[in-house]
Image (spheres, rainbow, N blue to C red):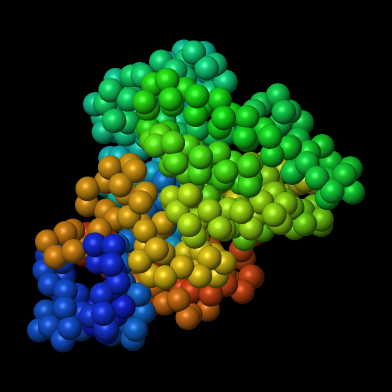
Amino acid sequence: MSEFTLQNAVVVADGETLPGLQDIAVVDGVVVEIGEDIAVRGEAVDCAGAWVGPGFVDMHTHLREPGQEWKEDITTGSRAAAAGGYTAVVAMPNTDPVVDSGYLARFISDRGKQVGLVEVVPSGAITEGRAGEKLAHLDEMWSAGVTLFTDDGDSVADAGLLRRAMEYLAERGGVVAQHCIDAGLASGGQMHEGEVSSRLGMAGIPGEAEEIVIARDLSLVRLTGARYHVQHLSTAGAVALIADAKEEGLLVTAEVTPHHLLFDHSFVEDSNPMFKMMPPLRSPSDVAAVRQGLRTGVIDVVGTDHAPHAEHETDHPWEDSPFGVTGLEWAAAVVNTVAALPPEDFFNVMSTAPAAIVGLETQGRLAAGQSANLVVFDPEAVANTERTVSRSSNAPYLGMELSGGVVHTVYQGEFTVRNGTLTDLAGVAG
C-alpha cells in the first residue's frame, strides 16, 4: 500500500470545513492524521488550496452489466466513476437479467471488487424481473448485502405490492427507492409537457406524472413507516411534496440529477437526443426549484442517473432514441457551477448523505482512522469536457464550459486519478 501526505488543502472532515489549510497523512489505506503542518508521511502531494473531502458516492448508476456490456460494463463504468471523483457507486438492477435475487447481487459486488477502482454496491429490484407483478427475493438480496431496492426504469404501480415491500423492508431498515413516473400519464410522451412541446408538436409528459406517484407513495410511507427515497426528482411540485413530508417527520429522502440541475426543456428545441431524459427536462421554474431544494436540504443528494447508450442506439431521430445520458465524470462540476455550495454542503450532497442513506460504513466520511476514500476537487479549475472514458458518449456535457475539476481520486489508499488523469491502476496509461 502507498504512503503519502496531501498538503495545503481546504479539508472537510466529519462534515465541517477545518480552518486554514490542512494536511492529511495516509498510510496503508487509512487516514492516520489530519492537521496543519503535520510530519510528512511518504510522498508529499501539494493540493494548492483545493478542497479535500470524502470520495463522492453515487446512489444511482447504470453499469449495464450483466447483459448490456456494449453500452457499459463494470470496468468502464468504474473508470468513469473514478474520473469523476467517486469512490462508491450503487448499481441499478435493471440489467439483463434483472438483479432480483441474491446470487446476482453478489455477482455485481464481486465484479466491482475484481475491478477495484470504486466500491460497487448492488441495489435490488422490488419485483421479479421488474415486471410489477410479484415481489422479488427481497430476503435473499438483503442477506447478500443489498439495502436499497428499486424497480428503476419503471414505477411500482401496484400499491398493495409496494406496501408489502415497504412493510418487509421497514422491519429491517432497508430503503425503498422509487422511479416516480406514472405510466399512464407518461404514455407516448417524449419530453416535458409545456410550451416547448406544443411548439415542437411532441407528445408531452406533465409534471403531475411524477407528483402523483410521490403523493401516493407518501401515503404508504405513513402506513408502513418505511424509509423512502425519490429518485431523479425534477419538478417544483415534487420538491414541495418532499418538503412537507420531511416537516411531517416521514423517513423520506430525495435526489436530483446533474442534468435536471443544469438544463431545462428549451434545450430540446434542436431535437438533439443528448437531451432526452426520463424524467424529461422540465421548465425553468422547475429547475430553479430543484436548485433551491438542493441548497436548502430538501433534496438530500445528487445522483447521476448515469445511463450509457451505445452510438448505434442514439444515432436516430429524437422519437427513436432511448432516454438517458451519462454523467459520472461531470456531476461534481455541474453542482459546483450551478449551486455554489460551501465545501461542507458540497461534500454532504455528493458524499456523506448518499453514503448514510445506503449504509456504507467506509464511505462518506473523512476522519483519522477511516479508510482513505478521498477526492481532491478544485472548484476554480475548468472542467475537462473534451472526452469521456465511459464506453458510451451520450453526454450533454461534452464541450460545455463547467467550473470545477477532480484533481486526485483516492480509493482505499491508492490513487485512481492523479492530476486529473486515470492512473495505471485504472488500466489506462497515466
